Amino acid sequence: MTRHGPTSATAFAVACVGIASYSVMDAVMKGMSIAHGAYSAVLWRSVAGVVLMLPIFLARRRPWPGRAALILHVSRGAVAGASVLLFFWGLVRVTMAQGVALTFLAPLIALFLAAATLGETIRRTAIGGSVIASLGVLAIAAGQWQAHASTEIVLGSLAIFAASILYAGSLILLRRQAQVADPLEVALFTSVVLGTLLLIGAPWFSSMPAMALWPGIFGAAALGSVSAILLAWAYRHAEAQVLAPVEYTAFVWSAILGYVVFGEHVTAWTVAGALLIIAGCLFAIRGKAAPAPQTEAAA
Image (tube, rainbow, N blue to C red; front, side, top):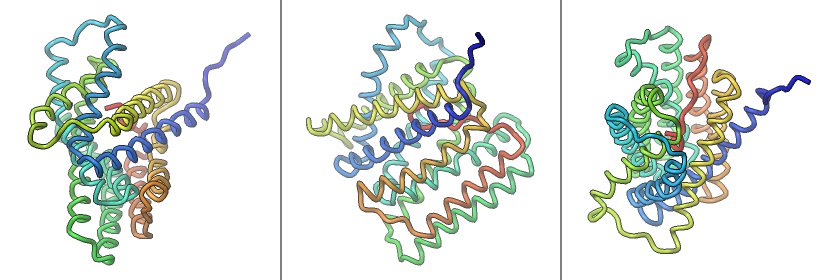
């Protein structure tokens, strides 16, 4: 009897659960950033990630990364770490829906960075997509202007925009990193590098979290790990171009979680901006298999 593997629909559903898990982690991290500061939240979540992943890495008896791999781990860990820190610092100041919408710019930015660093050709669809997405950013900015947004909200939006640029850079490094390391090694050493770098500034910018915060810290780390595993499984069983749109379901989850957990309301400007940014991304990858979106958890 012929055995059939999972269908694309199954992989799509699993990827949706992975994105939902990641969105819940965002909500947990936003709450921790509000309570303890983004620096401390990211630092101690990185430490928790190492505690959770290191035993698995050692149990697999895989060889230790070579010099070239370690250089890539450190480089990408630093870039991705700066992106994560800026993202959660900004997320404290804006709604979850708006913050997540701005992160959708990363795949587009990565297309242009790939052209500059990897010699890839910039296609007309990428240029057209960037124009459409730019209108989305302007729509979100117009909404802030109309609502007379505070300086804190504007700074939060700018921080997330900067985080998207750095995240796009980390995606470029990930292409090289994935050739020399498996996903578990990538995730582990990203946490190791980020945690080590943040520990340097811990005496000035952080303190040991209260016992009441540790369940949330380990919960966020576990949710990120679950998201990474589910997405890796989904992308192993279905084409990237089939699953790429799944990432945009994060906007729906962020809007729901933002309202339920933080009492945030999504404005029409934010919805319009998100739709334009998503349309720009989909237009840019038209006719070409989209790269698998890499969440921070997997990164």
